[in-house]
Every structure is written in C-alpha cells, then in structure tokens.
Length: 372
Image (cartoon, rainbow, N blue to C red; front, side, top):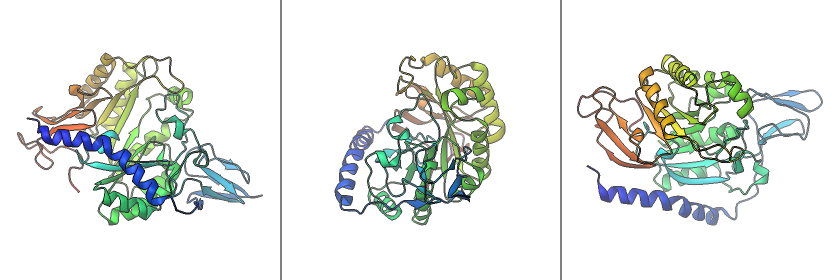
C-alpha cells in the first residue's frame, strides 16, 4: 500500500530542490575567486613541451597550447591541466533513482554535479550542450571539494553523484571530492561511459561505491559509428569495477534500428551474466529524439519489453525499463518468489517493503547497497 503523504512530499522535494539549491549556490559562491587549473594526474611529458594524456584510451598527444579530444584537458607550457577542476557547470539535488540507481539507497537524494566535456561523441547524447563543450566555454560555479561535501551534508544527501557529462573528464576533481566524502560517510556514485584506462580506474575504485555504466551497445561497429569510440575498453572497465568490489549497474539506451537487434542484446546479457553475475541490474532506457538523431523515432515500448524479457531469460535478476514512468518494468521484484519489493513511477519510490537487504516474504538477499 502506498504511503500517500510520503509520496507527495517526495515528489515535491524532488522537483523543487534542484532550483532552490542552484540559487543558493550561486548566491553563496558568487564572490569566489577565478579558478586555477589543476595539473592532471595521468600524463607523460614528451620532448618540445609535448604531453601525452594517459587518462583514457585515446591517449591524446598534445603540443603546447593544444586541448584534448575531451575538450577538458590542455597542455599549458609542457604540463597537462584539467580545465574543469572546482568549476562545475551543473549542480543539483536529485533522487538517486534519476542516475539511474535502483538497487542503491532507494528514496534518498544525491548531490549531483558535472564539469563540461566528454571523451566520446555520441550522436544521441541527452546532455550534449555541456558534454560537447569545454569548461572554458560554459557558465560555471566555483566550488572546492570541501564546498561540495559540505553542501551535500547541508542538503541531507546520502550520496554524491558524478554525472550529466563524463566524470573522467574531471577526474582530479571527482577523486578529491570522493576522498573527503568517504571520510564523512557519504556514498560516492557515478554515471559513466566507462571509457577510461585501467590505472586511473583502479585508483578511483578505492573511493567509489557504485557506478552505472552507460553501455551504448554491444557492437564495435556501433561504438565506432555512433560514439567515435571502442567497445573493448568499456567492457574492461565493467570487469575491473566488479572485481574491485564496486556495485555496478548498466544502462542500455535502445535506439530503434541501431542497437535494438535481439542477437546483440542477447549477447550483451550473456556477457553480463558471465562477467558481472546475475545480480547486476540492467536499465533498458527509452530514447527520445535529440541532438543529431532528431529524425529517429522514440523507442517502441515493445522493443524495451522484449529486451527485458531477453535479460531475464538470460539469467539477469534485475532488468528494468526506463523513461516510461509507471511501467511495471520500473519495479524491483524478488528474484525468487517474485514479490513486489519496490514500486516506482519515474524517479519516485511509491512503496518499499524490503526488510534491510532481504525480501520480507522469502528472506532472499537482494543485491545492492541498501544502507550506509
């Protein structure tokens, strides 16, 4: 049975908090000094003031004054600098369900932030205005890592989410925030494209609690033509996260005629079961026309439902449907007795009857992070 009062309050807070928070941040930090670029953690110096960035698989080689493919790192005088450190272009208080995380601290809020830039060029990007821009070309707020954590505490957020753009672009900023947040008992979560090299990833795994990887498709050709990237590094990231003890969820945006092939989805689900285990939640999300794919129709509901069926038949216990509020595929069910455990509509949790981390009916443990 839905608690109507709590549901109404949750929806009201979720809709108002981002606007109120942004106004408060801009007022409180309007007098902050201009940002100082932070030297990158992962790069090599080369002759003639050239540098090689080794943060992501592109490994851009940059002469003095040049900016990387991600638009967020620049060679200045023979040193590589992160342009977005301490300068988020988006800061909001969101329900954690928006990230999306469905098996992590349900019905809690996450302080969510981003700095501009991305190391992929997805034609279907929903945040292209900031992901396909440089931190020097957008409006930013000035927030130190301590500022971010203090505001998360002030707003009652149980987690800090690195999201909206690709968090590896502001790796140093994320890393420093995460270390402070861990000491303060705040969860660190991320929504990422997974396009990162192993050394920086393993260092980050020491402080990140949960990552939702945006697995664009399960085809090297799809990644090459639609994202200007490669699939294999993303798969390596998923395996490393899992083996490092980080909670992993997967988002797969289904585009009609591009990555909705049933054989591709079947292969992806089989790989996830083998490499990450059956408890890995997968979110099959509906695409709406935007950016460079305005001529592509919204994903048919039947395609999303078929993808979910494939995931469940492949052995994945938590297969969700996203961007269709009120669909039963948004809910969490016990994988053993099929009891409805968490009922959702969009980003709102309507009911949660879980007992700690277990199904109250059959006592099956449900994979996820349910307390902090």
